[in-house]
Image (tube, rainbow over all chains, first blue to last red; front, side, top):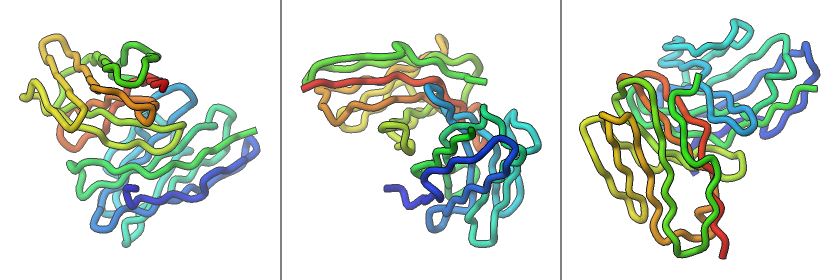
Length: 112
Length: 111
């Protein structure tokens, strides 16, 4: 157990809907990174938040957005869901941007 | 885009045997890390090797890094059924940048 928690565990949404995924970082960590893992693939970097500011973004469209709160927990929001958004979404927290990343258990999103 | 590529994609061995997985990557790196994932759940960090290191050990794990060939290997000695999982290599190009993962090797250890 890493101390990083994510909610919900599973989620089913319909194409076109919006979804919010949540991540609580490990105590003492101020950096959160989000990854998308499609079935049979490795995780792909979505973006990173450091002290409430976006600190790097992968090759994902603007309908993927995020927030980090003063307690360093984070949200991932996805608008206008598409079938290809079906994946395991992982968040990872670290003590700072250069620290080792500790992953949560993930949220499995299914878009129908 | 995937930076690393693991080989083989799948590996089946008997308990007690050694398992070797390889990872190749495309650009220069700051470090390379290996992760384990059980049944599509969260990733567990196994070991990190820096670009100026050639070999690291952690328990039954041995990792090598050859920056001239842009490749790394993960050796698990005396495998156990509990080692059954997917294993991913991830590279960090520069300190503080995003991890870039490969597609993983699925290891199955039968008793």
